[in-house]
Image 1 (cartoon, rainbow, N blue to C red):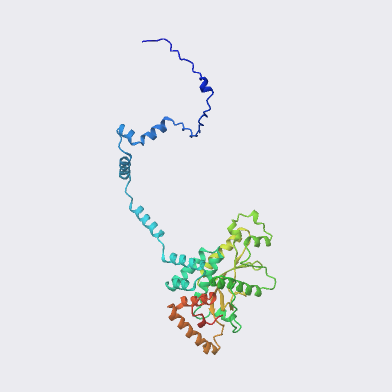
Image 2: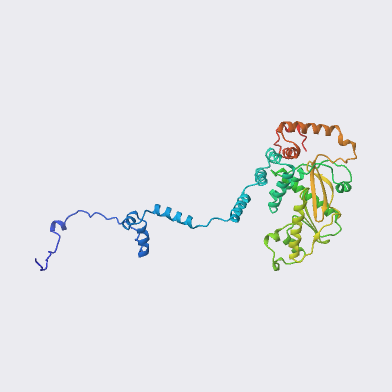
Length: 385
């Protein structure tokens, strides 16, 4: 074999090649991302997932291995004890949606959609009287910081409570009959919200008028942060959360150190709970407040309301409850209560009940909302407020 050096001739262009006018073909370079540097462990992990390398190594396919691992894991898990099974059932029961929660959700959607009278009435008509109170109380409780829903629920509850004999405390404070109040809901405001909002405004105004001798009174338009500022207490040095500073008691008489929470009749417990919460917040700020007396002036009476009248009283310390009724207020001692006009209105209500299929408080709520929203089809049959 020849082991010498190989001599390569040096290439040089010929004269013809030197004078050639052939343009060189341009080269379009393309960038490719660099291949990542992989360590040995990464290479082994990736190759272990490839079917071919697993077959060469004598390993089963990944699908078979996954099933075997799952079976082994199930075999290793201990059986649940009876108490654990019972707790699981309790959790499932708690997670199940109750009829009350379903009604609250449906009623919330109906109110947010503009409080369609038919829909609202149908939801309440499917519930018993006790369930109606529970649904409206739950709607008020969960929307304490949402006036749009909270006051709308209050309006519905006030209409719902507007039946039965008038409370003696309210009757004793009434001075005589009067016509129903004016009806002027601003904009497209839902009627239930309008009824609830006007109740708070009217009752707080009555309380202010009864204590016009110089008492310092705050109502539900003033947050606790502003109340403390007015009382010359710096809220910056206090350990109060923003939600506590934003809370707005319905009536706070700083001069008498009394507080009241206003709610529809039937929500006395919820009102007392909220009043106690406000008192506790003020106590953290060093302000001593107690629930207001049930006999304090301005806590009971009968006053005009939109298209009707409000009846309010203080059955529990720190609580004022109200109800709403349609039409003029006529004292029970006046025989005109059974007048021809009242009989005509009762006949109209019976006709509307036959058309809609609604009865009881659901029919009453339907009438109030439909008159205000002008959505009731036979509107000419209904006396407009």
